[in-house]
View 1 (cartoon, rainbow, N blue to C red):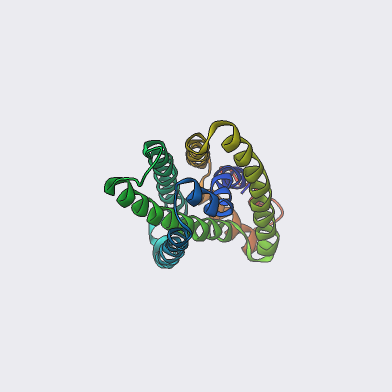
View 2: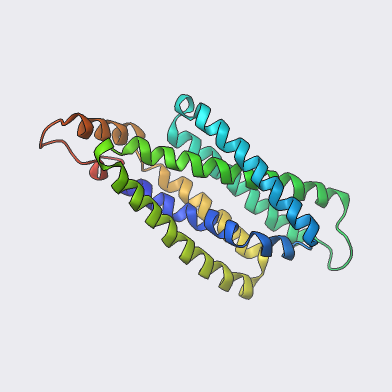
Length: 214
């Protein structure tokens, strides 16, 4: 579980920061208040759809495989926002191509947001024995809060120093780093350790947090 929490902290630097700065990012991309509202509504709608689909199909696909998929979505979405900002004209309205790209990427942000939240929560549930579920979900929440604080503070500084495209690319790097760290998490070992602890496999059974690869 500790390895998953480490990966979760890293990629949550990206998700928490995008949520916190959503309005600012939209403003930096030249959107009016009306377009920002539509931007937020599109993200909320696609996030809800993604969350529902993950809840229905994640057990078939695999918990960590699902998380990896949505991290890839986040890499594409944040890199896409950075590219749109870099290609925007200094003055005047962006062309049709950039406008279409923006709304497509907005949908990806929503898909990534809804999918990564639901799939990450499911991993914690799968790795937690029933008797300690509250404890592990408490740690999960604390890790997310810490990543929010660190991510928000760092993003603000980087944006002021280097601009929006560079700061968004750094967020894409956080998602990429999370993908790499997940390679060191063994889903089967984590689930088996949780099941052994729940079944009372004896004093020699490893706790969930120290399961090999978990």
